[in-house]
Amino acid sequence: MTKLTMLALTGVASALFCAGSASAADDKGASYKSLSDRATSEYKSAYARCNEETGNARNVCRQEAKVARAKSDTDAVAQYRNTPRDLGKARAALANAEYDLAKAKCAERGAADRGACASEAKSARMAALTDAKSGTRSAGTSGAMGSSGAGQDERNASTGTTPGAMENCETMSAGDKTACLTRRTTGSAKHVVADTVITTKIKADLVRDPDLKAMDVHVETVDGVVMLSGFVPSQTEAQKAERLARSVDGVKDVKSALKVNANK
Image (cartoon, rainbow, N blue to C red; front, side, top):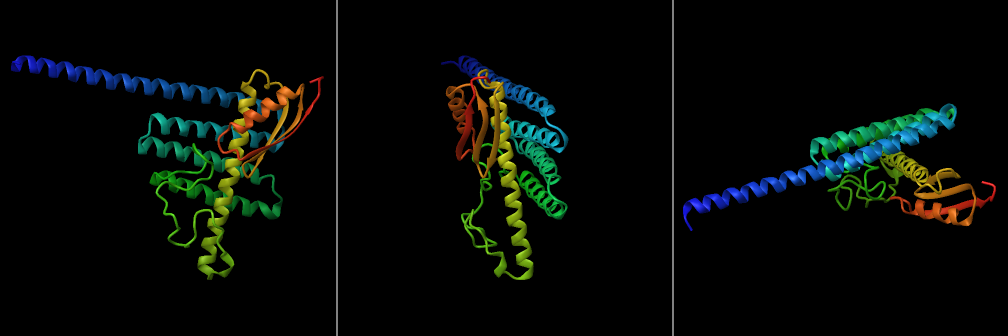
């Protein structure tokens, strides 16, 4: 084979490689745009439904919609624009959205609890922003809700506890006790936010489903357990709503109290 032929073949191979890379990049871009457009559509629908609420309930509903949108954006970035800069930016936006939601929920507390609630929300936000800045996994992103950050040691080096274990703050010295209580309340605040994300996602899925969008279904999530209540026209719709709820990431169990009302 002559040198000229080898050079020609090398050029062809290089061109094919570049074309393949460009095609892959285009596919990723199209997929990202598709997810982003869908998130926008779901957000607008969920936000519009909040007009049915009044007072602070409307504000909470709107903040839940924003959290769901931020989570969808973070998932899209993680799949198709997974660079430290883009992912950190998306996670920071999610942390701020979760913080706004937590503040809205704190407004529903009594005067005695409102200050502590706001402090917990602020601590959760700072922890999430630190995670976003360092590139570790934040609460509320794709996968199981409330999972620990990537690269976390099997045992916490500072506390000696395994992930998920409850620390006994009362036996610690004053300084360690304060840090322990902060860790505990921060984790609790993040978990509450995760429940609101699940609720918002289920509500959005109900709206998208042509058989369920007009149903009078109330959704509530506590510790990953979803509770459905309200009225549906038949047992078929009740079962479908339950299956839809079970399909959402982070749901541990579904308890249905849906009642059949043929007039609905």
